[in-house]
Amino acid sequence: MIQISDIAAYDGQDVTVRGWLYNRTDKGRLQFLLVRDGTGVVQCVAFKKELPENVFELAQSLTQESSLIITGTVRADERAPGQPGGFEIGIKDIQLVQLAGEFPIQPKEHGIEFLMDNRHLWLRSSRQWAILRIRATIINTIRNWLDDHGYLLVDTPIISPAAGENTTTLFEIDYFGESAFLAQTGQLYNEANMGAFGKVYCFGPTFRAEKSKTRRHLMEFWMVEPEMAYFSLEDLMAMEEQFVSAIVQAVLQKHRPELAILERDTTHLENIKPPFPRISYDEAVERVKKAYAETDDAEKKADLAIEWGTDFGAAHETSIAEMFDRPVFVYHYPTAVKAFYMQPVDGRPEVCRSVDLLAPEGYGEITGGSERIFDPALLDKRIAEIGINPASYAWYLDLRKYGSVPHAGFGLGVERTVAWICGLPHIRETIPYARMLNRLYP
RNA sequence: UCCUGAGUAGCUCAAUGGCAGAGCAAUCGGCUGUUAACCGAUGGGUUGUAGGUUCGAGUCCUACCUCAGGAGCCA
Image 1 (cartoon, chains in turn blue, green):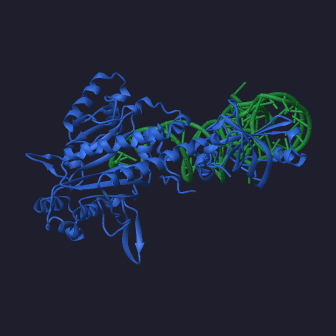
Image 2 (cartoon, helix red, strand yellow):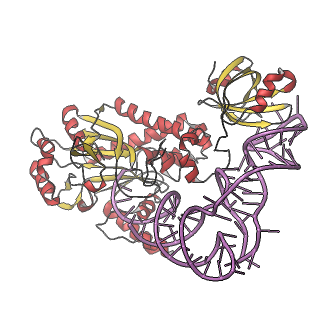
Image 3 (cartoon, chains in turn purple, blue):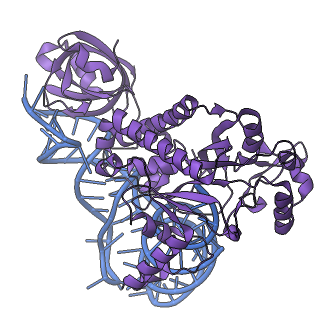
């Protein structure tokens, strides 16, 4: 029994592989079976004159995605397709586990609705194989990098008693007759954990009930949120660029074949190393205004219109990101468009010590973070200003009473990061089972 | 939620208001090097739903449903 990914180590030897029939080509007295086992794909060849009649007839009758166990001899052959490819198995015996019914997904073009309806089967295709393996490495690198740099994983609750930010975007659940919500961030709890452990992170699914329907949104997505005591905004950016670069480099190191399947141009990714450019919100607005003035395209012009004080839309982010060859930090956003807990800039309270990281190639915001307010009086004032009930946040306000320190943190969206690194036009393929505005099945 | 577009065979798509079609898949036959093989044959339809206009509607009109692309909001 071998894994197909290890096929090259068995040249000339007899092996057994267990898997599924990916595709079959019938050439009469010659059959090519493409077999996958989850680790890779290998071509298995059946010659009529070399096999007992019943084995050859079985090979001829196999349907796409039938489960089977094949025994044969490995040989190098440049013509052999597969993953890794270059080796094929000369079949000696086939054991059928189940003859599959007509498989709905063929190796050809399909519409996206059909593919998403058949997501449970679509996962078997080589493209999804490549994407989800890269996703696993991204998640693995996130955890390893943080663990290796002194961050402690401290889980935050998914069921929350009160709003993190804004109740209209929360999924409400019935908690034994009481109202509760699915978490859209672990950040407030992270701040409590930061006070206990110094550098912490939480990592899990988060939920947003926004009725947004774009290539960059999911109702359920995965986010890692580090939170660090005694960190300034500048410390935060220095850490983020190391962290994001490590993720990209890990994928480049481990997943060349997968990136090739996705036809990803890796030259963009090779550039992703510190330092990342840093521009202020003020400068970003000026740059967008300049781009606005320079474009003649009326449609593009309308998308690029902006006034100081408003948050960036998709077109603005893309325009800014296109000016750089690596991710770009935009810091000091207007206080009014950001969350209540963000620290105002000294002497200029209309902007806050926040920073977003915009990915290249139009992939938009992949992290958002800030320094948090640590002065209890200022936090009380901000809570009163936005009109939320301080009683709901009593425990959070406690954190400012007992050894409050300057601190900062950010969140990184896993699916947006996967989409960017894989070069995917839509986020829906970056997670095994996407939860979208119009999609709750399968 | 708003704007735009699309729903025809299992899938991808054709069809001037006038006989419902093709390729792939399936089934049968042929082929010893295929890379989404190729060649021949066979079966396969409530044209998203409900109304309307018309001698006649896949095609035109109205409403609804579903999906896609974009916007807003965000990671």
